Image 1 (cartoon, rainbow, N blue to C red):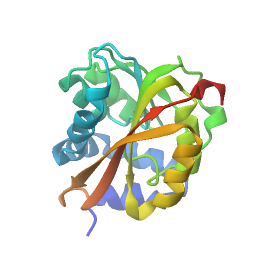
Image 2: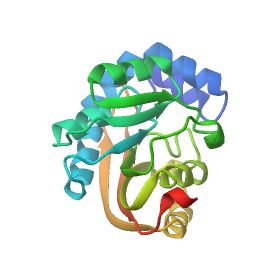
Image 3: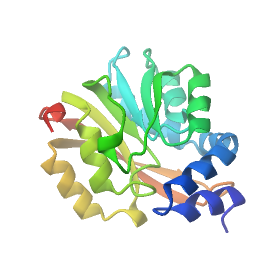
Image 4: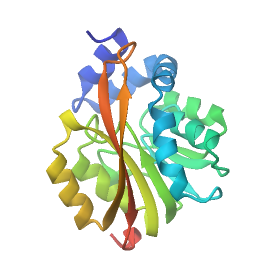
Length: 210
């Protein structure tokens, strides 16, 4: 059974952008604590950081309240990330972490309307965005377009919401060379029990030309 938090947030799903924003604006602090307690952000950081220099410049797509920024800082990243998210309340929480350089509001369902980015980046990371709110075939090309050749990408999908073979095919077409896959379970609690698959890949072409 979902919590009131999830009933509101995931109930909006692929529906109204305004409803998704309103849900995260309302439940931002509660969601921040719940996802941190799950351990998934720390697991993602442990998988990605071995591929990064401590001074790498990255961007967090769907950064939410900044849990991935906190996890990467704890894992040794020294530079603050840029971040994109729909919810102003969540962006405010991300700003308060001190882990974000330019947290910007963006509707990632409409990449052409997103703000200008300080690309190309050395790496990008995203968790809880693709498949949950933005289809992988919309989000992944936009994320890759922000990266330099040789950059790294860490991205998580919940297998039940994303067709794995189609995602893998698109990743290869975009020039992503897969390096690792890590299982990140989210235990049942304030969030519904689910399993994220966190992929780390290296971009073998220039993403900024797309």
